[in-house]
Structures are given as C-alpha cells and as structure tokens.
Image (cartoon, rainbow, N blue to C red):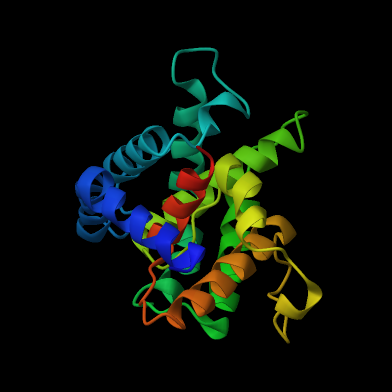
Length: 216
C-alpha cells in the first residue's frame, strides 16, 4: 500500500476514535454562535478554541498582568473589531470539501486579513506573529472546517510529506498573504490531490492528523 494512503487511513482511524467528538463539539459551538454579537460568545470561542487546540496565543502579546490577561485582551480586541471580524469570516462560510485552488486562495487571503487585524503588537516578533498565525488558523477552522490548521507540528512535518516547489504556487497569489501559512496550505492542497488519486475523499483535518502521526 502506498505510504501516503496508509498514513491517511491510520490518521483517520485515530481521529475517529480519539478526536472526532471533540472537534464536533467545537464545530457545534461555532455553528450555534457564528457571529460575534456578544462578548459572551467571543469569550467562549476564544478560550475554548485557544486552550483546546493549544494555540499558545496566551503566551504572547500585551497582558493586564492578571491570570488570563492575554486571552482577555484578545477577547476585547475581537469585540472591538467584531464587525470587521464578521466581514472577514463571512466569505468563507459555506465552503465545503474538497479543497481546491479557488477555495485555498480565498482561505489564505481571509486568514491574512484576520491575522493582521487581531495580532497583538509585541516586541517579541516574529514569535508573536507565529503564535497568532496558529490561533487564527484554528479559530477559522472551527467556523469553517475546510480551513487548514497550522501549528508547530504542521510546520515541521508537513514538509517531510510534501516538499514545496514553485510550481505549487497559485497563478494568482492571495492578496497580502501570510507566506508561511500560504505555503502550508499549498502543501495541504497537494497532499489532497495525491490522496484523491487513491479514491480517497480527503479532509483537511485528517491531513493535519497525518502530520501528528508522522511526528511520532
């Protein structure tokens, strides 16, 4: 059996047994509260997604000095800019598998917009940008499951499964995209294309689990 196909099947089996219920709970949370109309729903989504997915966002940015200060600052930032946050997420709503070039382009463009909007100003750049990048990808993913997740595991092990080359760039690069996240999404798309050759209908969340299994 092809190694890529075997890895995907292994990742899917583990996902179904260990992770699927947790993800469905997060998806339901965001589906029930898709907007940012109240501080309560923003608070719930930021804390639950940020801590459940281990984004590391709470370790960077300005803080009040109190426990959870950074997370509270993020909640406040999203609340203050809630109209713009909704405008960024809205074009992604309704995107379904499979991932393709058009959808990827839109995902990367909107990810970059949200990243710029909520990234804390910090002297710890690029560390703060790195942690915010991960949080934004996971926050968007919980609202739209087609959005690829990015974190330190994906950054290290996605290149081992898919070596990036210039031919993977889209003909029209997303507007002011975050290059690191863009290249990762291009890898996810390429892996998705290769998996479809085996009759698999790949989901980006299972591809993400492939990186975790590869890390062991």
